[in-house]
Structures are given as C-alpha cells and as structure tokens.
Amino acid sequence: FLNQQYRIVQSQARLQQGTIGVKANAHSPRVQMALSKGRDDARDLITKASKALDADLDSVLLDPDNFGLRHEELRDLLLERGNVSESRAELIARDQTLKTNAAVARAGHEDAGFSKYQWSTAMDERVRPEHQILEGQVFDYATGSPEGNPGDPVNCRCVALPYEGDDESED
Image (cartoon, rainbow, N blue to C red; front, side, top):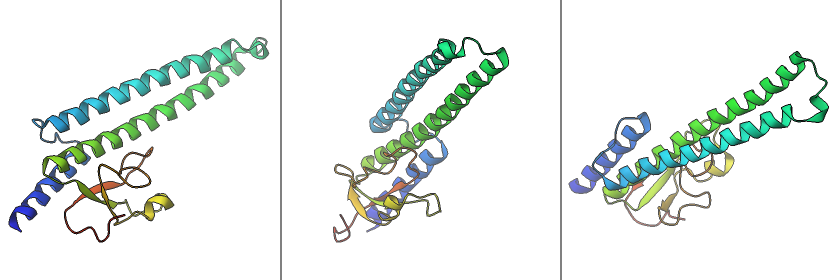
C-alpha cells in the first residue's frame, strides 16, 4: 500500500510539474520523447500556418477585384488576414502546450508504472459536453476514451490522473 501511494505521489508531482512548465524528470526517455514530439509537432504546425498566411496574403494581393482598391482598403484586408493568422498562432501555441503537457504527464505516469488514468476536466463552463460525460471515468492509455486521451482533442484542458485499482468503473 505504501509503495502504491508513493508511486501515486511521484506521478502526481510529475503531472503538476509538467502542467506548470517545470522540467519533468529530464532523464526519462519517455519524457524526452514526449517533449521532442511536442516541439516537432509545433514546428510543423507553425510552418503550415506560415504557408497559409502567405497564401492568404497572396489571395488579397493577387485578387483582380482588389486591384482598384485604395491603399487604406487594401491595408484593412491585409490586417484582417493578419488578425486571423494571429488568432491561429495563439490557437497553435495553446493547443501544442496542452498536448505536450499531456504527453509529458502520460510519460511520467507510465514511468511510474501506471497504464490507466481517470479523466478529469477543468470543471468549468468551458468544458465540452462530451468531456463532461467522461469526468471520473477510468481508461487505459493504450485504448483511450471515445475522445482519445486527455489533451488529444484540440484545446483540450482535461488531464489524466493516474489510476491503479479495479476495473469496475472503466469504460
């Protein structure tokens, strides 16, 4: 029982460290792999977003309907496209941070010997209805829930709490 409690405390510490941005067990290959994948995924999304911005700007600048516009009107169209790109950049940054934190937490759980988790939401008005239904349910990391694992869906703020026990509440 004490060993089990010790592993839970260790896993929770890793989860909280990852959530607040403190380095989580830098020597763990699983954590290193999760961090590396998070960086690579973010870089890929930023590259795609940059290409999309170039295409958006070209669509404004090369549109024959815009050739006769005054520079103020053209500026406004370009700013509008830029604002869309800025909000997309914010979405990417937020989403990739959540995904990386979830992956680091999972790596810490698996390092501590946990293969199951209990779904936990932020329990506020922004939680998706389909995630509210998952609150408190137990899943295996390998198979996940119908929504995947916490952090998988875009902008998912849910977390996986390490679980070790009977399978009675598992879906």
